[in-house]
Amino acid sequence: MTSSASASASSSPAPRKDPWDLPDVSDLTVGVLGGTGDQGRGLAYRFARAGQRVVIGSRAAERAEQAAAELGAGVEGADNAECARRSDIVIVAVPWDGHARTLESLREELRGKLVVDCVNPLGFDKKGAYALRPEEGSAAQQAAALLPDSRVTAAFHHLSAVLLADASVEKIDTDVMVLGEDREDCAVVQALAGRVPGMRGVFAGRLRNAHQVESLVANLVSVNRRYKVHAGIRLTDM
Image (cartoon, rainbow, N blue to C red):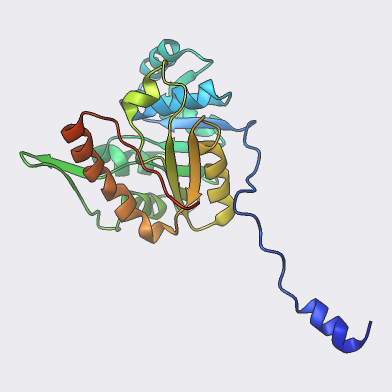
């Protein structure tokens, strides 16, 4: 090979990675903070049903253990700190008004962990649901600010707790928009979403774009109330 041909070959761009080539996450333990609430219980049930090891957390271990026993499917219960310690991926599904307080109290236990924030800051009045804008920009950005030693992503915002918890529903037909600063971390969360039949994880940008994803839930609340459904999100042409 001539020197010019060699230089041309060395300067060729690397093959583009297939965005649907996702890692195997089947051996990871999933923790759900706020796992005794409707959304947390639903997510825990679906991941356990898909074969993941799942630990749900609550401020009181007894409450988490009771909820885990009710869910079955091998789900375990613990207090929030123990749930964080025992998990590889930790999903934050706590109420918005307890979001900051919960994360601040678990900063050490969440150090180095992959954290998935699915909290939607919403307000409600006589006109219905409306989006709140946290000082940091979004719930996910607040989590990143409070957990500087964790790897924070955002996902699972647009899922119906009713459908998640319904054992007669075989598939959850929806896309899960995943946001984060590290593509490999996002790929892990995408793969986790894909463990649930019908669900697909899609990379949707960095955490600075999390606000509009979280806010869209206010629109889904209106859709669900008007049409008496449990609407989700599908992205087309993919």
